[in-house]
Length: 259
Image 1 (cartoon, rainbow, N blue to C red):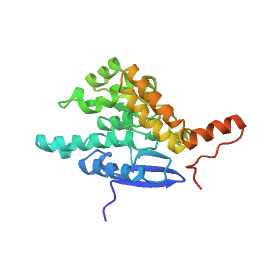
Image 2: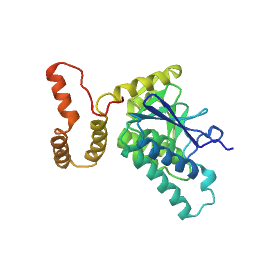
Image 3: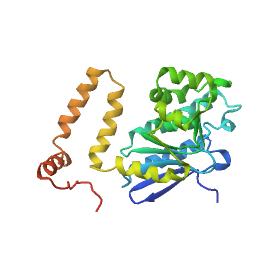
Image 4: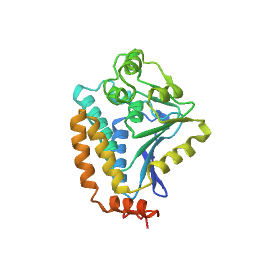
């Protein structure tokens, strides 16, 4: 029986989705993209409080699989790109924080996955690139997410040169949250996940959704949205419990805490 494109495992209340095509450098074929969409959709409805995205083998992901694209017509290429867009949208819509665990190379759409994740931790050996700029097919869609992480000048340098930047540069540019020695990658991911999943699960889910929504708005509209959401959620059980616990100097008891 063929190995699954994506393996899902649980450690307590954290789900790990592992891209499982090391022989293809975890290239994002149409099958891999569909498998990732299904895996994220499945975990969205689970009891998981957080999701780690990882890759098996020597690299995180080499980006779109050219084996699917060489000789493909425009409609076939568009179908793959739309599935990739569906995946990127879904990663930011699910209620749980998504942390990319990055080792080796993350290039093109693989780098897009890192940029699109809510958070990312990289091993010191990791490298990041949008290599289309030095080839024949520019990284248009990867740069949507990458540019929103690193800013215009750095995005242009990545996109036009196609050069690989190292993990420390990626940290300085805002593409990842932390860089650690390779042998500390798992513990660093676990530490970050523990910090970003504490508190009310319901409140965090609304917070993630609203943060992405307001970031696409101008400042006045962003404040309008934030005020509306914050006023409404002040009436939620967990909001009131958090306030009471603070005033009473006791640990809070969240309504959605695991039993």
